[in-house]
Length: 176
Image (cartoon, rainbow, N blue to C red; front, side, top):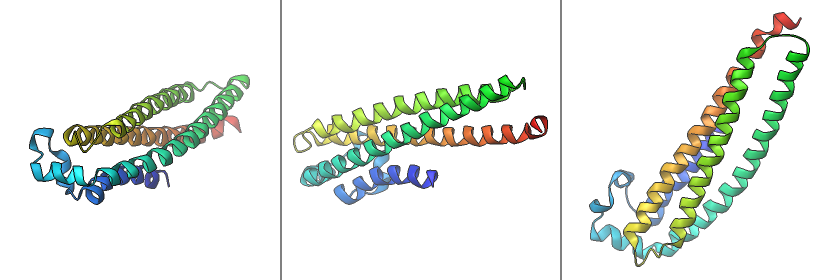
């Protein structure tokens, strides 16, 4: 489910280029200098549609970010409480403490990455894409890359939670 949500956001941004601009996915790798006048004209002609799509993405992502952030906060509280119970019962668990620390760092990085992504989307919407299509396109590419970084952080958090669960299972004999 998490992987589906992570890839959905990336696909939505990638889809903006294809659906709104009609530019092939291979064109994403192009720099601003490689944008032909035809592609710039296409961006200008579909400017309004792309900005509406960006507004919709920004709204959906904001809700997702809030919900995910709350879930991460709750998860961190539960992990910390669980670690405290281990300490209270005098069970040494340095690996759990390290994974918890890594989780906190990954959640903090997720928040910073999301803020950067959100700023880029907002900045893209402020650009007049009819007058500055290359700047607009460049900012969309930057937002797409930053959205990918957010997805990578979500993946790291999922991996760390998997590691945490495996570590807890390994302590099962000690606790019993």
